[in-house]
Image (cartoon, rainbow, N blue to C red; front, top):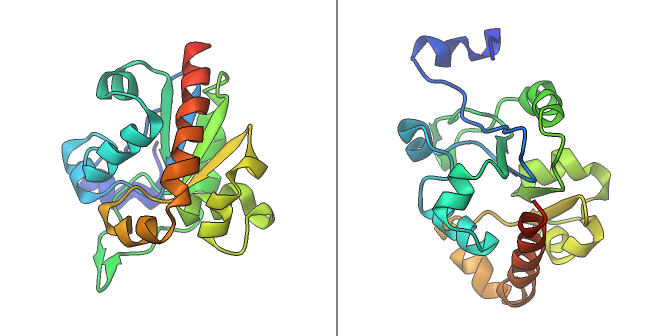
Amino acid sequence: MQDEANLTYTRAGIEPLFAAPKTARIVIVGQAPGIVAQTSRLYWNDRSGIRLRDWLGVDEETFYHSDLFGILAMDFYYPGKGKSGDLPLRKGFAEKWHPQLLAQMPEVKLVILVGSYSQQYYLGADRRKTLTETVQHYKDYLPQYFPLVHPSPRNQLWMAKNPWFEEDVIPALKTVVAEILEGA
């Protein structure tokens, strides 16, 4: 991924963090690696990842070593810390790299969109007014996309206010994922 825009990261010895196995059946598109993931060189390697794998109904071995999951982000590098959370993502990154990487994964049956950045990019004008409404109407985007809220522990309050998510959406997600993986 030689790119002038990534030169600062390359010079610091930081490689882009993604996975695009040719046999991927499911692609997960998130925001950007967190500092733990970037430091450890393993995407979704934190409490958010544990929760995400639980939501998917898969274990670490399947998630990391089956080559059935592609992992993309709206930027493949941790953006840094800002005053109130992480800094904004770089513009134009997904537009440049996602089409190329998705073309390398011809067996993809589902793209899971984690958070508002990926939903905005992939769903565009078809997304609902809010992330909550988009996730609540996940069936409208199937079979191609499955929108999710971020699995961050910081979203405990959101999950408490939206019990339908764990009651309806997560079981549906597990079913869709299981059906795709069983057909692999």
